[in-house]
Structure formats: structure tokens, C-alpha cells
Length: 339
Image (cartoon, rainbow, N blue to C red; front, top):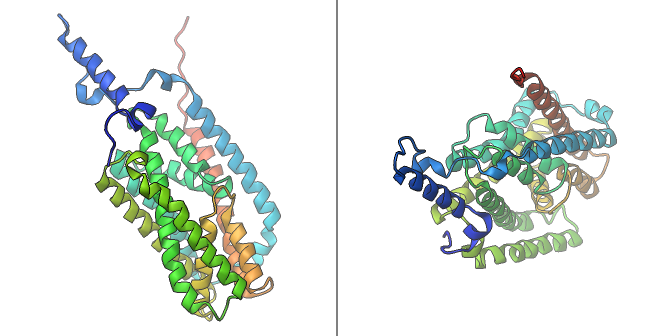
């Protein structure tokens, strides 16, 4: 599905920079007296001159500071005392919570490891990507991860096309799974939903279809990866969403095992709908507020949903501070040569 000619490759330089480098290496190799030249198959992975700037480092620092400020503000407004009063006693709750938190970066790692062969250390950048998307605004995490990948040009020559395709496929899989979940909720959720809520859910379904159609119609012009890679990434995204639904339901069930499964299914649907809202910071807290409006503020379910959302923010904060301290103390000192 990769377009030929000057389409995306001319815009993003995915093919032209590599071809130019290969041509340059071939010319050097053919020159008289040339004895040691970079192999052509590695030439496209050499750092570009523009990557000598420090903008990826600056972007990373800015996003880290912004995440810390956003996390501190949201934890302050959500209220840590309320979190301490709502902590469940079941150890299975905490096991399921850890797995739920790890699901997004692990599936992202499976995608980008297959595309680029990134090391396990890339999980740190992917976790920061997830935190930025949760705390700042939609797709800010993709901007951070693009800067991280761009700063590692020896590992990936042109990361924009892959990051773009993975992000679009994430949205498409999210819309598809939302439509499927709506099909499950509408028949079973009539006992819990008011008529106006049904209208809102159906409107979300229509919007999901409308937002997906342009990417499907113009897929040949939009996507850079080949068809097999696109389908593999799409199904991995679907697996990530399903795993997230399952672990979310288990987290809630281990905390309140007496609640009916239909109620958890309804709340999972509302959470998935909220996740499709673009450019909304901290969708978990927004979902907690919507759940409180739906089932009442003083109920054990609403307190549990709020506690899980605030607990996620607290883990975000701990990880961001931990990553920052690790980077600070693990930096190698720069040795300056004597004048």
C-alpha cells in the first residue's frame, strides 16, 4: 500500500534521503583509491545533518516538565485523602491494576519492536508516550515519541511515517472496537441508561464511522507502510483494547465483586467512548466524573472509579519522577580535552 512516485516520500524524505546517501556512498566506492566505504545497506541509517541539533532533547525536557506540572495539579484537585479512604483490600485488585497499567506500553513495544527492532529500553519512551497522552492532550505522546525516535537516527532513518501510521491505526481500531461495544451495550444497558444517554451513545457511533471513512477511502495516499504491516498493527491495537477492557473489568470486579457484570460492561463502554475524544487531557478523570453523573456521586462504584483514576495519576507521577532521576544520575560525564 506504499504509494510510488513523489507522494509521501517526497514530503517526509523517507526514500529520497536514503537514496541520496546510497548514491553518495556508491560514488565514493567507485572513485579511484577508495578503499573503505560505508556499506550501501547501512547508509540510509546514518544520522542526517539536521539531527545534530538538540531539539529532540529539548522536546523531551519540555514534555517531562509539562507532565510533572499537569500531574501535580490533577492530583491536587482530585484529592489524595479520598484515594486513601477508597483503597480495596483484595491483593488481586493490585495485580490486575499493574497489568492494566502495563498493557498500552507493552503492545506499543510489540508494534515498534517489529517495525524498528527497538530495545527493551524503548519501553521507557513508550511509557512516557502513554503518560503524555493521558496527562497533556491527545497525540502529545506521539510528538514526544517521534522526537525520541528522531534522536536515534542510527536505529530508524525516517520515523515519521511509521509513527503516523501507528497513530492512525490506533484511532481506526478504537473506532471499530467502540462500534462493536456499542452493539453489545445497547441491548443490555437499557436498565441502567436514560433515553438521552442512548441518543448520545448512538451519536458517538455515527461520529466514529464519519471519522474513519476518510482514512479508509484515501488509504493509499495516507499510509506509508505496506499492507501486511498495516494489518498486523491494526490487530495488535485491537488486542490492546480488548486486553484493556478485560483488565479494567477485573480491576473493578476484584474491588466490588457483588456488582453485576452488565454494570461493568456499561462503564467499560462509557470509558471507551471517552477515550475517543480528541485533544482531551486526562480522560480517566473525565470518565470518573461522567460515571458519577451516570450512577451517582456517593455510590461505591463511583468512588471506586475515581480511586482507580487517581491511582493511575499517582503511578504516572512516580514513574515520571523515577525516569527523570534515573536519567539524571546515569548520565556519563562529558570529558573535555585539555586546551
